[in-house]
Image (cartoon, rainbow, N blue to C red; front, side):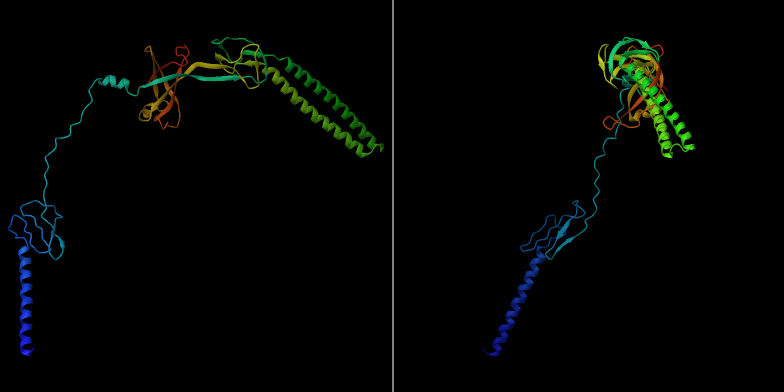
Length: 337
């Protein structure tokens, strides 16, 4: 091909390519949305742009996509004013009680039980057969009186045997001491050896030690004999008898229960939020089922709160000299301000 003809063809091809690029650019520009348009316009190109009308409220983080990239544009802030809710109204409980009644019922604890001031299950110190009781259940007994007796023949024989053993050792001690004196004189006259004297002195010392042991055994036998008489450790009522006459009882086995009810405890489990009303020394009143009221004061408080119930155990001490409060009686406890 001639060189001139080749140049003409090259220029024509270059013009054709430039005209194609300009048409594609125009088409891309035509596909962009018109700002004044109320509807988004989508072009025929591969990339499309999305826009929202200006008068429509949009979220501040709205996205605007262009043909080149995604860009985040901050839209105008939108003030959302919801409808004002109705003002909160506190619901008051119905006033069933007047102020004076509320004071008397404040801190009232139900299911309060009367417990004895002290009680003890008395056990036998020795074993044997119960010969008889000197009191029946429900009788009032004073401190130191004999309530029951256990057969003591065996223990009386033990005392006699201990006495005889002690007497025998005392006689043996006298003999050992006399023998020691003789050995001392013989040694001074060179008629006996020092070894014999030492043996006599040792015999006397051993006998003295046996006397001390015999005295201890005698004291123990006397204690066992005395323990056959079961006495009341304090004044109170004979509440329970675990053994009856002619029955066998073992050492440290329970025979009866003694209860002191001259004073009583009103025992209650107080919720934690009411404990400030029942501090130690505070006044409290026990109301029985018949409406009688007995006033006492908080004497003991258990330091541990029950995690299951959230309550704390308290003991209100009350005078019961007239025996108006029976053990096991139930009622209600309230704080007395």
